[in-house]
Amino acid sequence: MREAPRPEVAVEVRELTRRFGDFTAVDRLTLEVRRGEVFGFLGPNGAGKTTAIKMLTGLLRPSSGDGWVAGHDLGRELDAIRRRIGYMSQLFSLYPDLTVAENIALFAGLYGVTGPRLAERRAWVLRMAGLEGRERRLTAELPLGWKQRLALGCAVLHQPPILFLDEPTSGVDPISRRRFWDLIHEMAGAGTTVVVSTHYMEEAEYCERVGVMSRGRLVALDTPAGLRRGLGRPLYEVETDDVLGAIESLRATVGVVDAALYGRRLHVTLAGDGPHGAASIRRTLEAAGRRVSRVERITPSLEDAIVALVRAHEG
Image (cartoon, rainbow, N blue to C red):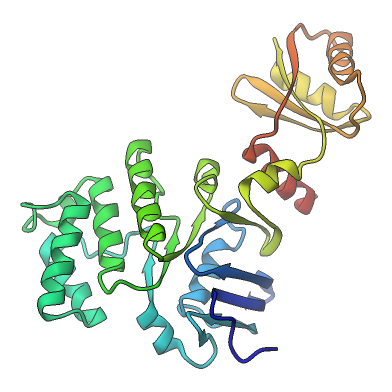
């Protein structure tokens, strides 16, 4: 085991584990995040994403394993790590009974940002968050999208080289969510490493690489395109008059790996890549008394790939 990671690596963990009594929340997590990368932890609620983020930011002590963040040892140099990172939780880490200006001043004090640099960074936060002229408003009164951007600004007041985001867009409307990701990519383009946890499939597409977690384990690690290619089985989209009944019929059919509801349609994964996949699906459903209007082979989405990975891991 090395004493420190390579210079081009921003985060490195080996066999990182966190237990709560008999429950293992994160089980032997091993990965590297490159400097300047936008890296995402993706998985269902309870998969271990937040626990992993909290260990990497020093908020939770690992039960076992090793790790380095910004070149500092997770087990021995937590103060140094905290000075080199920004952290934003899904609750936005703001004080609702303080004004916008008071929240900025509080975080500036915590991060040691003073003098001319404080004036410069304060102006940047207000401009980035769209809060110029609203410095005296109570944070509790702000719309959710403004709170989100203010929290982001407070988290990076000290211009940390690594930013951790834990479910940062939970409950935020799609337009605010997209604007937020535009800001994240601006920061990454300027050299900031971003580690984000999310359960939104579309947000994983914004990441350069994604680590898929399920029941505390890292079950896949690849680019979004690589994860889609990795599904490796033919996928069909089916339109029928009884989607719930069709799911039951298909799941009981030999050669069908999975059948899942996607809006008003079904996505059906077959075990083999035979030439008559669409015809066999249609025959199965019509034999069960279902009327089928369309069966078409499609390119797997990232959601299809993630759902398949998680279901395979969870059995």
